[in-house]
Image 1: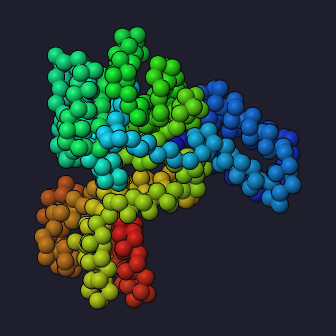
Image 2: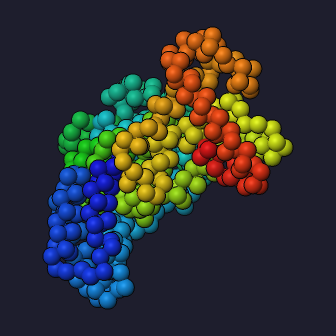
Length: 447
């Protein structure tokens, strides 16, 4: 999401971070480059203006001019101000009420609202251990109701049925009554979206809000809409007592402006961001961590949390024990690692959270991507179990069969086998060193 912004800001701040002395000119030049980077990232102008003014005031103040390394001090100020405009700290969902806690979801059509309802339901179920009911008050799109029912079945949460003949307010009230009777803890109410903001839409969602009095009213916004995201957030904030925002599609080719604009304009926290299409692709929004990502400093804490939540610990322990006993690392083990990596969002998602990755040349980054991992997995899947466990058996005719089965070329098979031999040697050394068991428990996907 922040690739372009991160690269621009990174280049600008690297040029000044080593300066032992700051002058009016290099501060002015830096501010100009930061302003350009933010505007190109589609950050709303009022936000850019205030952000630059706040940095400039601090940059020419005592904390920078009297520091041992003024350049580094300025970088620190930029990071702190980025964190500040996005909200300082993660704002948790408020579920402190007599059950069920009702959460109303609002947003424009196409923002990913229905999918986000399912993602949030899964997050509540898996991380907060809550029993959840979802329902759709979108009576204008029967397909949206069916979509939510299907998603609820996939993530195994309760679904309260509705149809286009019913009144949205009645659907919401009946769903809450049903949740009470079943002693469910949280109710998520999906609402109708429009392609644009209109009076009819706002009147309807106001009526639903009045009827059910939710403890949380969350605005779901497509981060790829740039400044329009801030404008629509403002309109919904004027109409409803919003308690927070969820940014969707942050894994797409978005410039990142929405994340920097929405919170400052609405003065309501960003609580979550969607980082993929699957129902587990929802992250709590931590402004300090996102600021670190933008400045190329990584986000290892989120990576560790994802590993804790998504990695199959039993498989990791099993592999650690296998390597400790001196049994070799084979292609089946390698395939398991690829699957673990995919469960954590893929190599692209993981790399985005590692410090310094934005500074790596694009050509180098392109060598390691999710497409190449999918190709490797297809090659391994086309092998027999015996070949996966004993790769030395793979001769010319076997390579041709594997290439045909995986839709690849023989040179792809040769490249994989060569890389795998290097990996086997590395695993052997690490196992002898004694650090493998601990590493496999904590970061199996990182191999």
